Image (cartoon, rainbow, N blue to C red):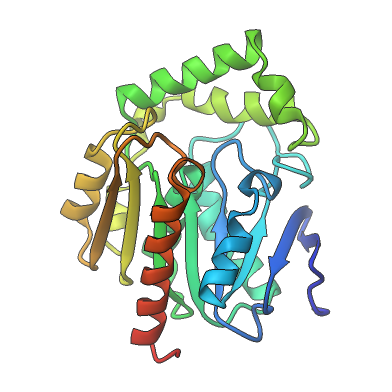
Length: 267
C-alpha cells in the first residue's frame, strides 16, 4: 500500500478502519500495535500512544475496530466469538497491510484478550511480545456485574454524553458490546487454551482494584502459559492503568519493550 499518513482509514475488505500512526512507520522500525478496550477507539487512548512512542523510540500504530470510533459499523448482534474473529481474521490482514515487520502487541481489556488470542492462534514471528493491560481470560461474576453497572450508567446517566465524542454511532457501539456480555452465553467464553500456545514473553498489568476482573485472571495466565509471564499489580488502580497509574504503567511497558526487542536482536 501507499505510505501511511499520520492518520486516516485502512480498507480491509469491506471494513473501513480508522487509524493513527505516531513516529516511524511499521515498515521502517519496530512498532507497537495498540488494541483498545471494549468501548475504546483511537481517540480514547488519549496521549498515551504519544508517550509510548517518545519513551521507546518505536513506531506506534493505533486503530479503531469495526463498530468503534470512526470505523465502519459492525453487524449486530455481535457473536460470542467476536474477539476470536478479530484476532484470527482481521488483525493479521491489518499487520500485513501496514507493512508490519517487527514489534509487540499492546492491548487493554478486550484488546488485551484479542492480543492473547493472536499470540496463541497465529504463528507470527514478527510479534516479539505481548503487553496485556487488564486482560480477560474468563468471565467472572465481577465482570458481568461491572458491565451491567456500566450499561445502567449509560442508559440513565451522563456516560452516553461522555462517549459520544469518541464514536460515530455511540448507541450501536455500547449496546453491541454490552449485549453480547450480558445477554449472550458468555460464561462459555474461555481463553485458557489460547494461552497455552503463546510462545513470546508476556507482561500483564493489572489494577488491584479492577472492577472488571480479579487477580484470578493473572493466576490463569501463570497456570496456562508456557512462555515467560511478568506481572505488575498496581495498588489503588481500577480497570484503566494507563490513565489511573500512567507513570508506573508507562515505565513497565517501556522496560519490557526495550528488553524484548534487545533479546530479539533489535538495539
